[in-house]
Length: 219
Image (cartoon, rainbow, N blue to C red):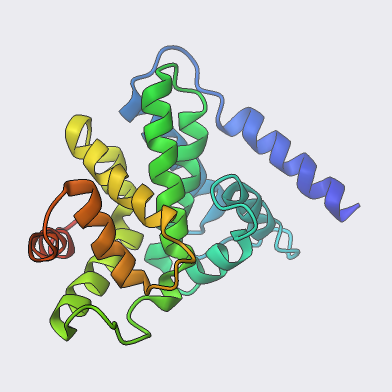
């Protein structure tokens, strides 16, 4: 019965909340889906709702995350629940995926989906960032990378939905490259630096400069 309730709620939510009437631009669609998701999942204090007292909203959020991080959804949601800003960003990430599924330009849709998957992956590893001393970066480089990492898991979707063209493509390449490095034995901050170096084709010093700018950006 409980499983049927969850499935029924998921179907109802997807069919009604994300029904986008008429022609919409991508920013309009993203804004609409994000607003709907925030209202559905979060209360006025930014906490995850539990309207039924049975954690239905948490279960459906995990279902939504499963499309982005198969098999890792529980850890992603668990990490996000530890920080309201990260939780808000995660809800936005799931809405980006749903919006992308309805975008006719499939290249743009794939770019948005890749970005959402990369950001979900980063949230899944957030408990590891800066926790293990780096064997290949200085203390200062690690601090910059961890600060940029923390900014990305809190503001990542805002950057993803606000940027367009080459800027968004560049950003998505970084988070996608990070996602591809999961499980390689390196720390999360090491993988972030490597992802910037690879995708932007720059030296480590230049990658650190890029991450410094990212960590200092504001919403």
